[in-house]
Length: 526
Image (cartoon, rainbow, N blue to C red; front, side, top):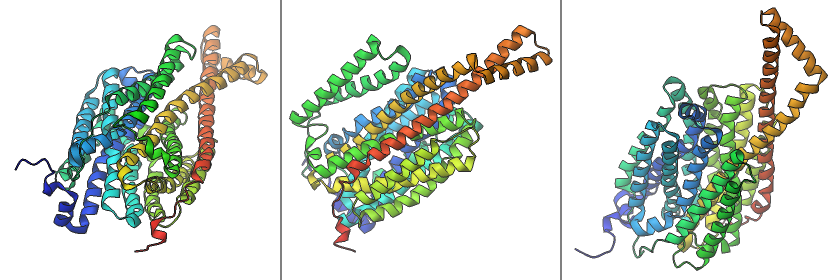
């Protein structure tokens, strides 16, 4: 037997014959198991970030790369998914991606240098980028139109439970062992996913020939993302007007334009521009971009906020995110069901408004904000995002013909992760600049404010009573006030960053209101 057709036993039809209707859920669970490993890795590192930076001697800019490098690689690799599935099939793409992810996770857990750690995070992100669109493709392949929203909700339920529990478990591991342990937490689900993939993941689809790889598009995209994120990171260290930063941003702009122009004429583009010709898909992609910026940006900020401003331990900072994650997992089930019967613009708009309100509330955080008060504000926001995501994905894919499902799944996830990379980077830049501005303003009060001078005199007297010489007491009082000002400036910077997130979410209402496709379930109820 030497024909080149896919083996019958690997086809979707054969697997349906073997496992019956249960195959739909078996393959969805298989995809979910692998995806959970990647999502655990993407969120859990934020809890351990201060410890990793301290252990490896990383500055703020390098620490930022652990999050943005993962997101950038994830973003670019998503566009490789359609080519990989057509070329190698679902099973090989799935198993290969998880294998790379496992190796990168083990190496990250053993890393002793900042360069190796960043490289491992990039490899993890690339593997995760190949996996995530595959899950959506499979759901749209094996479920009928009127049940896809429910299936997406079930899938999203599992996806959200991972980041809900992950940071808390990661915090416990950091406090009980060390930061190395957080990279091993995702390995059991990764190995389980590999085992399930051997049985339930289909092979290549019939009558689908592997298309050539778009090498030029891949190079341009990698160059654009790499130089853009590098420029945004280096701008805080080298100055925004420096030759290095300006050069990186110019290269990023030129590479981005070159990538878009090439995709319009490439015989086998990484990102088929035809998907954006569908107005519904284009608007959903814009919402996905802002959604990604909001969720990944806020997820980056929250652990830093509670550890740096409120002095929480990694365990406590992980626990504060757990109630929101558990609740939103159940919201996804409801939102997935709603996506089958309600026009997408309603839950998407509602979710964006709720998340904007939550970010506005967090924008009033202070050092005296109680644990459960902040936990409730976070929970409100995650409920909003829970209403948004299933309807956003289903609305986007519903606007496309079946032949573009592969490109559509990769593109909508690409836009969400691109928004996440941009949002995390820009919020980090905005946080630092606003913190510096507040520090400069408050420092003026140390040197010239009458109340501050009185406080300094009282501190000097206290230190003198404690036995310190006059000169040392004066320096100690000034240092104490300086640290108080730095802490206050940091808190005000975080407030400004969350208010910016709220504003961006409200702007996303404009494209969200255009998602008015009629759900299949509104006509045919089963």
